[in-house]
Image (cartoon, rainbow, N blue to C red; front, top):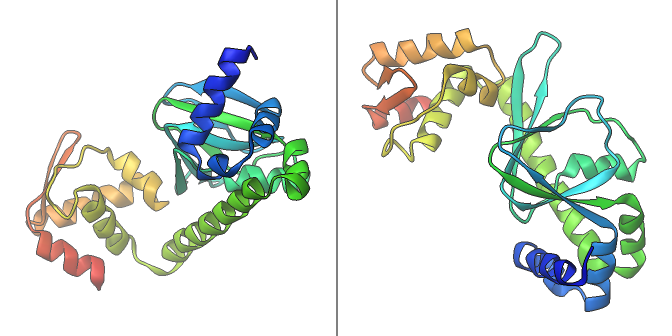
Length: 229
């Protein structure tokens, strides 16, 4: 990497990641030496089940969606990664020296991803405390988030989870939602037909109106009652 490009990269890291601002110049330069930057267009699948996983992914810009696909083809969103965060499952791969992914990683927007080698992480334990503290903290947060997703799928009805998702995506009924039934199904980890049936039920009750690619909340209070009960 050319000198000027390296300086720009270092400044971008400091702007995006809190831990990078805690590093000394030598530590930051060392990190850059073990990192590669990849530009990823929206819609790109960065990883899927069984693909190679040999580096820690840090998101410099954009948004990534992490999901799992069942044997029967159903997909569920586990969590999303935004700017300044890391993918904990990529961290798990390098911790255990495991080279195969167990999830699908998709760029929801144009993104820039920094891949850091396992060698740097090993060095960071002794020489770069802010970096490994950041990684472990992010892993903990995402683990709890993924656990909540599994818990909701196992113990909360699709109707209630759909109501919660509608309220979230519409800012409690203030805005229209532009999502396909397939996209709702991916978020909830269920079949598109199930989502369509529940949405039609909400429409019959006057809670919402359905149009092609657009959904309008008509009765926020009724939707909130379903989301609570």
